[in-house]
Image (cartoon, rainbow, N blue to C red; front, side, top):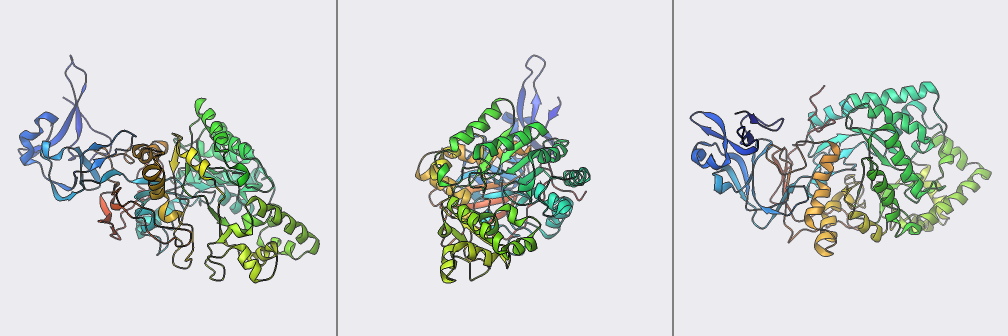
Length: 564
C-alpha cells in the first residue's frame, strides 16, 4: 500500500497515513516504526509491537496541555521533537515514544511558536540579534521590512542573517517608501514613466529574492506623496508572484495632517490589494485619536465587507494605547519636508514660511493630544524619557519651536501616549481576522525609555484579555498568534503543533505569565514563558535565554533561504 507523508517530512520521521483497501477508501493513521533494521509505516494500533526498536526522539515535552494553533480546545498531549521537526503529538506512553531528554511540562500550556506579523526587531545588530525581548514573549518568527521601509536587496539581508545567526525566524517585505526614495528621493510629485518602471524593477527584484510582498507606509514620507494608482501599479508587480501580500501602514489611521480620512484610508488599502490581486494586511490596525475613540467597528466593517466579497484582508494589532514613530512625522506637515532635510531647514529659516509651519504644527499637536503626550524614546539622553512639552518648557519656548530645534539635529524617536482607545483595542481583538504584532524594536542600551511593546505585546494580550478580563479564550488568542498568521502567510510547516511541522514551540506557565514592561521601565522581559524552541533548539529553557541563534531566514512560502 502506498504511504502518504506531508511534504518536507524527514524520511525517518514517525508519521504518515496509509490508504485503506478498495472497499474502505479512507486514510489510516500510521507511525514510522523501526524494526528488523529498517523503517516501516504501520497502523497506529500496531506501533506497540515494535516500540522497543524505535530510536528515541531528541526531546519530549511531557504532560502539557496542548493548543495546536487551530483554535480548538486544549488537549492533554506530549510533544516529541527530533532534529528540527515535531515527530509526535499524543500520548507518548501509550505508543512507546521515548526521548533522550524528557521535560516535565505538567500544568503548562504548549503552543506553536508565536508569529509577530509587524516587527522592527533589530536582528542585524549586536544587541538585537538574539531577539531576547521577543523570545521571552514566546515569539519565534517576525515580519520585517514593514511600513514601506524594506530594501529590495532581500537576498543580501537574508544571507547576512544566515551568516551571523539570528534568534528568531525572519521574513521580509520590499518597501514602497524605500523604492520611491531610491528612484525619486524626496520629490513630492507623481513619477515619470521611466521612474515608475525603475520602481517596478526594484519591487520585482525583491520578490524574485523571496520577499513576501509589497509593504507601504503611506502615512510616512516619501510614501505620502504617492497617489493610490502608483501603489496599485507597484503592487501589481508583487501580485505576479503566488501568495503575495500587500502590507500597509495605511495613509490615515485617524491622526494624519491634513486628514485623508480614517475610513477612506482603509478603503484605499483594500482597493490597492483588490485591484492588484494580492492579499492585504493592515499593520497595527486601530483608530487613532480621541475623536475616533469607539469607532473601530466602522473600520472593521469595511474589512469584513471586503472579505465577504472574496478579498483576503486581515489585520494585526498590539495591546498598547501608545504609538511610537518619529517627531518629524508627528509635528511637521509633509509639504515642509519635500526635497529632504536641507529643504526643510531652509523653510524653518524663512520667516513667513516658518509661521505657517508652526501654525500647522500646533494643529497637528491637537490631533495627538498635545505636546505633553509626545514622549521621547530617542537615544539622545537630553531627550529620552521626557515629553516635548518638558523640553519646550526647559528651553523657554513654544512646542513648535522646540520641535524645530530638535529636528535641525536630526529626526527623533517619540511615543504618542493615549492615541489608541482601549475600547477600540478590545473590539478589534475579537475579530476572527485579527492577528497579533509587537510593532516593536529593542533599540539597545542607548535608550533607557522605549516603547514596552517590544518586550510585552504578546504576553500582555494573554494577560489582559484572557486571564484578567476573560474577554477572549486562550485557544482563540493563541490562534491569532499562530495558525491564523501561518495560513495567511501560506506556510505549510509552521504555525501548528502537528507531526511533521518544524519545531517552533512555546511553553507557558499561566500562573506566572505577566508582561513586566511599562512605559516608565520598559526593559523588562515577560515572565511565564518557560520554554521556547526555534527549529527544535531551545532559545528559552526554564525561563532563561540560551543565546542560541537557531532562527532562519524565510523566503516566500515559508522555506528557509538557501543562498539563491
